[in-house]
Amino acid sequence: MRPRSVLTRPLTCFSLAALCCIPLGAAYTSAAEAADAVTPRVQDTWDLSGVYPTIEAWQAAVVQVNADADKLAACQGHLREQLRPCLDQRFAVQELANRVNTYASNLSNHDTRDAEWQGRAQVAELAYTHFDSVSSFFAPEILAIGGPGVEAAIAADPGLKTYAYYLRSIVQDAPHTLDAAGEQLLASSGTIRGEPDHIHGLLINAELPWPDITLSDGTAVHLDPSAYTLYRQSPKREDRALVFDAFFGALKKYQGVLGATLGAAVQSDWFVAQARHYDTSVAASVDGDHVPAAVYATLVSSTNKNLPTLHRYLRLRAKMLGITDLAYSDLYPPLVANNRTWTVDEATALTLEATRPLGAAYTSQMEAGFKGRWMDVYPGLGKRGGAYMDGAAYAVHPFLLLNYNGDYESVSTLAHEWGHAMHSVLSAKAQPYATADYATFIAEIASTCNEALLMQAMLRNAKDDDERLFFLGSQLEGLRTTYFRQAQFAEFEMAIHDQVEHGTPLTGESLSATYLDILKRYYGDKEGVTHISERDAMEWAYIPHFYYNFYVYQYATSIAASSQFSADILGKKPGVLDKYITLLSSGGSDDPYKLLTTAGVDLATPAPYDAVAAQMNRVMDQMEALMAKKAGAKPGKKGK
Ligand SMILES: [Zn+2]
Image 1: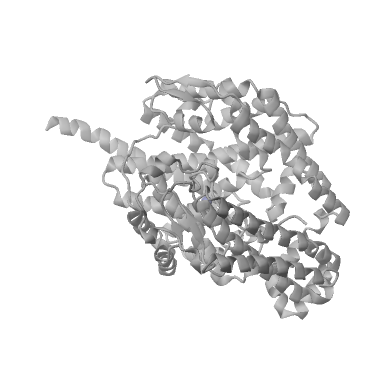
Image 2: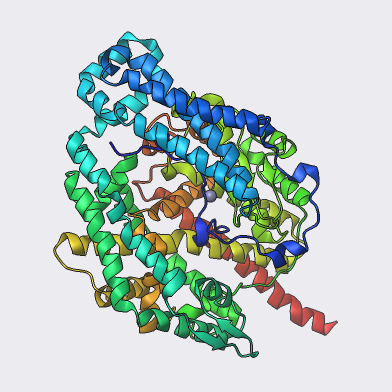
C-alpha cells in the first residue's frame, strides 16, 4: 500500500523550497549572519512546553510510543473482528509518535550544532519508523476484508466513521496494490530507486568542479549553485551573462553523466508505474493522492494558452530594465530596488490586516497564535535556515520556524507560513486526528492565498509609487517562478517520461534538446520576446525536483487555486469565503481534488489557470498606469 497523506512523516514542512519561498535546505545560519543578532524578546521565541513540559516527560512518551506500537502486534490477523479498537489503537500511536517528533525535531532545528538534541531527534524518528513498520499489516489485511466487507463494517459500527476515508482509500487502491510478496519486493527496491537523486546531489553539491569567475567590479566568485542563485540577480548585465555562461558551461561538460542520472530516475518511475499496472508514469504519480490525470493535462494546455501573459511580463521587464534584446540571463534582477525593512510586529500587524477579508474568526485565531509563542522568529547560531510550519502536534498547535530579517521577502514568508498554520488550526479544530492531515496537493493554497492578500495590504500601505512598483514587480516575478516556471518544469517532466514510455532512451543531449524546445516556447524565442540560446538548455541538469516523480506541478496547481480564491474573496463573490474556510477545515477527510471541487475550484478545468493569468494582467495594468503617471509627472516638475 502506498503511503497516503494521513501516513505522512512527522515533520510536515511545507515550503516551495528554493523555487519560491525561503529554501528549507541545509543552509544553516552562518556565524556572520547571526553575529549581529540581538537576544530576541521572549515573545519572539517559541514555547514547546505545551508539547512536553520537560525532557523527562518527552523521554517517557518515547518509551510509550515504542511500547504501544508493540501492542499493535496483537491486532495482526484479527482486524476483521477487531477493526475499530485496532484502528483506535493504531491512530493513537501515530498521533503520539508525531507529537514526540514535533518536540525533538523543532528543538534540534533551533540549534543544529547541539549533538544531544540531534540524538533526541533521531530517537524520535526511530520511534516513528518502528510504529510504521509494526503497523504495515493494516493495509493488506484491510484489502483482504475487501470493499463490501469494509462498507458493511462501517455501516454496522458508527465508531468507524472516523476511519471511513482511510479504509475506502485502501480499498480504492486495490487495483494498483500488489500481493504481499510484490509489495515487499517493491519496497525493498526503494533504496536502489533513490540512487539517481543521491548521485545527482553528490555531483551538484559536492563533486562537480564549479568554475571561478571574476565579476566586473573585481569580485572573485566560486560559482557553485548557491553563488549562481545569488549572482544571477546582479544589476550588471555583463555579470549576469558571465554567470550564466560559466554555470551552464560547467554543467555542459557533464551533460552525459547528468543525462544518464536523470534517465535512470525516469526509468525508475516507469518501472514502478508498470509494476502497479498504470498506463503512464504521470498517472501513477498523481493517483497517489487520487488526483485525476486531467488536472495535469489541463495545467499544461491552459498554461500554453496563457503564454501571451508571460510574454507581456517579459516585455515589461525588458522595458523596465532598459533592454531591447532580453536574454534568459536577464530574468532575475529585481525590477525596482527597495531597501525598506519591517519589524516583526509590523509584519504580524500587516498579516492581520491583510487577512481581514477571511473573516473575524480567522484573524482572531491567528492573533491568538501570534501571542501564543508559536514561532521562533529570528536567525541564530546553528539555527536551521529557511522557514517552515510544523503542524504535527495535533492536540497542541502548529509551530513555525522563521529566519526573519525584516526585508519584504521575510514579511511575505511570515504571511505564507501562517497560511499553513491556519490551515492546520482549522483542520485540527474540525477534524478528528485520523482525517486532520491534509494532502500536499492542497497544502500550498492557504499559504499562497495569504501572500496574495498581503500584497493588497502592502499596496495600501506603500509610501509612494516606487514602492508600489516594487511590490507589484515582486508579485509578478513570484507568479512567473511559482506558476509558469513550475508548469514548464511539469511539461518537461511529462515529455521525458513519455519518451521513455515509448522506448526512447534519454541522453544528456536528448534532454537538452527537449528542454530547449519547451524553454523557447515558454519564453517566446520565436516571437522575439526573450532570446533563448543553446547555453540555457542545460538548466535541466541542476534542478533537483526532476528527481521527485511529478512533484512540481502541485506548486502551479496550488497557486492557480489560490489565485481563484483570493480574487473571488476580495471581490466578495457570494459564498466563496464560507467554501474556502470549509476547505481548510476539511483537512484530509476526502480526496484533495474532491474537497477542492466542492469548494468551487476545479483544477481539471481552465478557470483557475485563467485566474492566475488574470491576476498577472491586473498587476501589469497597475504597473503600467504607475509608470505612465511617473513619466507624465517628470516634464511637469521640470516646467515648475
Ligand atoms: Zn509553503
